[in-house]
Image (cartoon, rainbow, N blue to C red):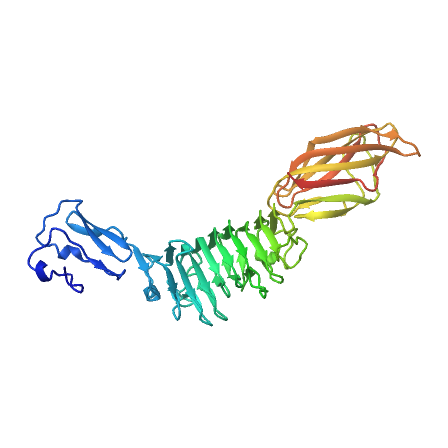
Length: 472
């Protein structure tokens, strides 16, 4: 036996160290300072002493003259009470041992950041039902916070006007990253300001109104993947992801979430201006339902941005519209292409009208211009009816404007030649069907050309002649 306060021998053990040492306690925070107790006792390297406590055995190893408790890592703080979150040490990992009642206590995340782990989101958790409460805060806006990293626990903040986060990045270069974190019945997830990047892997939002607002400039993007959202409050009207003060995502926002939205809540309320780079709002492989049903035509799922906007690149989704980069331009008013020299290419004249344009724009003179940066590889399809002199031989092709070089490139591999045939009713026409490929960078365009190999008879593209560009 030994004294619980001083760990010194008492009773019959007061004058001689025992050959077998056992100590039991129900205090899971107790430190057993056994090294000072075994004065004068010989140990070989690797010998062990067993200490029994409430959660099971802790083994103490004697190595090179020092006792080391194997179950307590030097850089880990085992948290069983909210008071242990006072004065966060950024060099430590805070391990959430069970469900911690955070009533009246906010976690101040220092500029060095915080790392949190638990046993899993069914065992470890941080809970608070206070009104007007925030769980994670910065010391001040000026000082800010560092990385916020978490794994394997749940958070439940359920009080009125309460939220999980109000954090300001200390220097705009920190990360907000979580794996296997569940938010249960949270009133609001809160506000994040100017973090470099966000990452969520295997996170869940269950119940409540877990809206997260992103503020300021995010340099590295935000990715939330393999995540699920279910059973949200029927009264929720805020979006899951909300654009806050001066929000701008300099890289991509990517998600493949499975989400069931309540009646009035959007998925996100971002606007195109939040994404200065093309194709960086990426929704890929999402499953989006509202009240359990797929409603891809519901404009309130993404009320302020469209699948066709230059910022959007939405692929393989169910329950929302997808992005199909490309467009079609069609002759709506016939005009004559004047041929002054045989076997010489001229731009095919006519008044053209664009349709189905996504990341493209169409001009009335028949250009289809790529506005985005990716993708760059395209399939080009054309169906043309060209009127000219009977039996003349016509050739058509595409040419490309290379905006970066400031030159036209003749795409001779796209050439197709047909003879003008005399058809019933006095029409002398040649029919062309092209299916070819090509590449376009930002502000490049395709345009059709025609030449008369047989002479100088003019050419007219009939109405409904068209060409289409679509990504490969």
